[in-house]
Image (cartoon, rainbow, N blue to C red):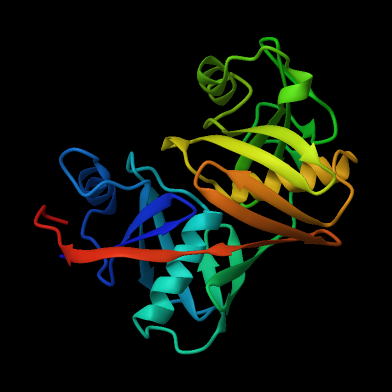
Length: 266
């Protein structure tokens, strides 16, 4: 199968124009970093009746993800590079709804949409308010959904926290019916954050677009940052998040790494 590899601030993906016969098996095989090419997930297009195209995303462990902020930026760049889409602004159908993307020079701007600040069933055992901290076995965190479920953990609220232990503790808490993404946030300035993400289905990643979006929105909502345009440092680079009303926009680059043939049966 012809495959392409892209990265968006270090979050790497395998893309193909073809629809794998078994996407779960294909994702596990091609994303393996020793026996495959290595990636955080796979992306492939299919036809949509409600948008310009549909994005299909599987994590490296074969699980389906509703949405991926970095993934959709890589997907958009891939579509334009391969001339599957021939306009700079278009709509993509995802399991988290229709997302509008725009190619702006080297960057891709994604309308992440409106966050859910009162998450409950089926994601959680009971409803939580994103403004109220939840105690995860001694770790304070805030839960909200930005296309997918996220928990924001502020380092200043959790002094001495061990990130390697805290990630799995929060992610696998009994509150969640199917785990959560965990974002560890350090407030650097009035419009600057550092964010590290322990991602559901992929583990520690160099970047998580929806995680960055959730972190900025939560920090702005609580007055921890003072501007609606916030710069974010992630291990894989830099991103920018703009908040307009209740809408979140994620901005960052996405670049091709390689293309080739993957011999494992897809």
